[in-house]
Amino acid sequence: MAQRTFSIIKPDAVRKGYTAAILAEIEKASFRIVSIKKQSISRPQAEGFYAVHKERPFFPGLCDFMSSGPIVLMVLEKEDAIADLRKLMGATNPANAEEGTIRKKFAASISENAIHGSDAEDTAAFEIGYWFAGYELV
Ligand code: CMP
Image (spheres, rainbow, N blue to C red):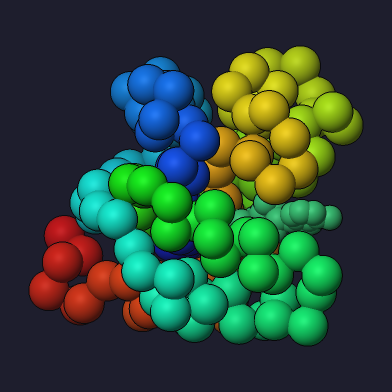
C-alpha cells in the first residue's frame, strides 16, 4: 500500500541551485509528489519542527541553518516511501553516504546535508501535519 513521507530540500542545496536536480532524483525513484512548496521558515518554526532534538548540542546551529534561507517542503508517496527515501538520501553524514545517493552527490557536511526525510511512520505523520494542511495534500 502506498505510504507517505515528508521531505525538505535544505537551504544549502537550494542556495547552490540543486533543487531541480534533487527533484529529478526523487521522481526518477518513482515517488509521487503529493504536495510541494518553497518558503523561508522562522527560527521558532525550525525549533518546533526539530523539538525532538532540543537537548542535542547541534540543535541551535541546526535551527539557525534551517531558517537561513528558502527551503522546499514536500509530501512524497510510494510503497515503502519512508525507507526508500532514506535509502535514496544516503547517510546523514555525506562522508558515509553511498555512491549515487542524494547526499553523496549534493551534500557538503553532516550539518549542511541537502535533504531531510522522515525516519518513521509517527514522525512522518507529525512532520506532514506540522507543515501541510489537509487541503494541500492532493
Ligand atoms: P535531519 O534528517 O534533518 O534531522 C536532524 C538533523 O540534525 C540532521 O538531518 C543533520 O543535518 C543534523 N545533525 C545530526 N547530527 C548532527 C551532528 N552531529 N552535528 C550537526 N548536525 C547534525
